[in-house]
Image 1 (spheres, rainbow, N blue to C red):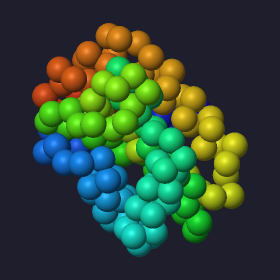
Image 2 (cartoon, rainbow, N blue to C red):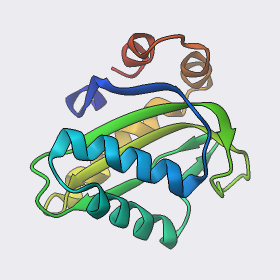
Image 3 (cartoon, rainbow, N blue to C red):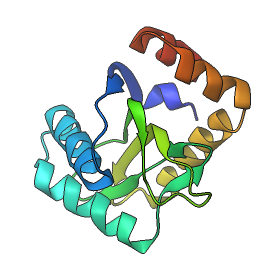
Length: 146
């Protein structure tokens, strides 16, 4: 399984203005709603509910918010590189500037775990993370992740 199966170039945002964690999740829900046709409020509620279980900030300035969504036909990934890091209550307390959102069908829980694992594998390499931070365009980030 490849991240490129779920990530399109138009789903990469570069230098998003910094906002709070909850506002960012709502922005990403809005972006997701445009792609999926599912109400942004439904997506935001699912993301916030998952985040309330524990931060999806995995460390090193990276967060992977994710949720299972009823009625979603296939998984969707959105990548956001923030203009400045924000507090995400990450496990290492380092503010986050790279966010990879994953939405998956509620019926496909196993697929969700496989995609999360794929994302984590790609972001475990310091050189990949540094290159994402140094990238000037969505195209550059897309090439790095696919």
